[in-house]
Length: 373
Image 1: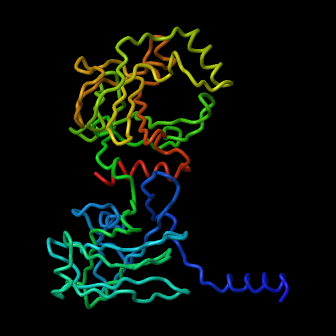
Image 2 (image 1 turned 180 degrees about the horizontal axis):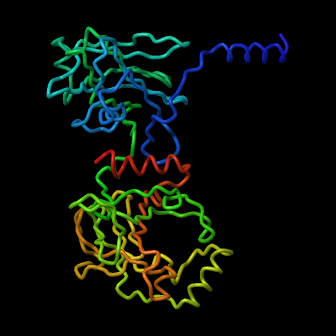
Image 3 (image 1 turned 45 degrees about the vertical axis):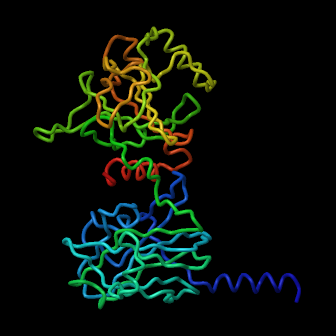
C-alpha cells in the first residue's frame, strides 16, 4: 500500500468519527487562568443559579440541580483535547435540603456512543462505607478520555430532580482545577461596583501606549444601596481591599506630573513601551500581596487611608483609600475628569486575563467577582 492510499484511508477514518456539538457559551477555564476551555452541558437546569458550573466550583454548598422533566438527567464534561485521567470523584448534591439522587452512572464517549464505565448505587452499604466527605471516588486505572458524563436515570432521581455538588478529576495525585481557587475569595474593591459594559475597561483592551494592552479592570459606577440607583464613583468613594494580605506598596510620597510632562510622557510611551516607569500613569497606588502568587493593585487613588503603610496586614473589605484620577490628564489640569478605579489582579507574575480573548476575559471576571460569591 503506497503512502497516498494510507493517507486517504486515514482521512476517511477521521471523517467517519462523529463530531460532537459544543455549546461554546458554556465553559469554565482550567486553574492556570489561560485559554484552555473546559466545556460542560446538562440535560436541564432548575434555574440559572443551579447551572452545570456549580458542580465544577469545588464548593460543597453549591450544586447543579436539574429541572423536573420526568426524563433521565446528565451533566457532561468535554475537555476537547487529549486528557489523561486516573480517577473521578462525584459528590451528590441537594435539593431543598435532601440528597437528590440515589445513584448514577459514569459514562465515557467512545466512537460516538456513551458506554457505562461504572454504575454507582448510593444506597449500597459498601459504597457508603467507601465514600469520603460524602463523595464517591471512581478508580479509572488510567484512561485517555476527552469526554465523560454523570448520567442519572430518572429512576434514580428524588422527586424527579437530580443534583450534583462536586465533580473532581484526578491524574495520579494531582486534582485538576476547574478554576483558580486562589481567586475565589476576591471581592470587587468598590462596594456594590458595577462591571463595565464596554470592552475598553477590561484587561487586554487595546491601548495606544504601554505596549498596546490595558492590564486592569476600570470601575466607574456603583449602585446605591438605598434606592439601587446607579451612581458614578467620585473622590469620596471608598476603595476597599479585595482580599486579605500585606500591603507592599503605598504611595505616600506621590507627586503629580505637570500637564506638559504628562503629555510628553504620553507621547513617548506611544512609541516606546517602557521597562521602567518613573512617573506612572497609574498615579497614586496601593499594592497588596495576598500570598500564594496573587497580588492586587489599586490605581488613580485620590487619597490613601491613614492606617495603610507598607507591611500592614489588611482584611477583605478594609478601607485602604479613595477613588480618584491621579496619574491622568484631568489631575494635571486640576479637574476630576477620568475619575475611576483602575484595579489589577496579578497571578504568578501575569495579569489576570493575559492571553485571553475579550469574551473570555469578561466571562472570567464576572465568574470570579459575581457568580462565585
